[in-house]
Length: 117
Image (cartoon, rainbow, N blue to C red; front, top):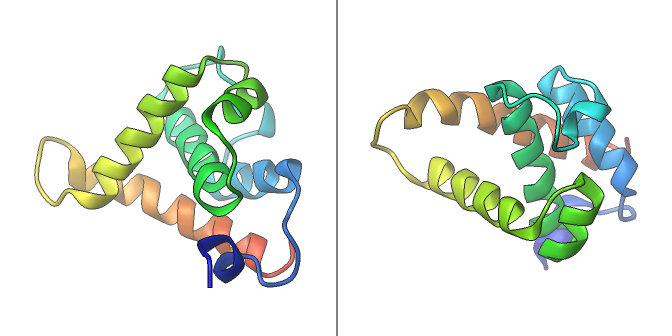
């Protein structure tokens, strides 16, 4: 079973539903998921989780994610790489703290989408 099928058993959610789920899980507004606003850590982490779900669970390409977020695909690539590194690594400066911030957002958003929005 593919990753997307495992996460979304019913039907594939819309991008807006993913935005709402991630924003709610992160405690930010949907508009905060757009690049160009603040670079505060909680907003950046929410964006990264949004991008990760679009990429891993919904199969979006980097360019599509970038267009949706109002940025360049290289920014998305960097963010996805950071999330991957943070979730994978067990050592390094700030890794534990950042994982504690990102992992709950990712889990909560995916659970919300799995329950049917």
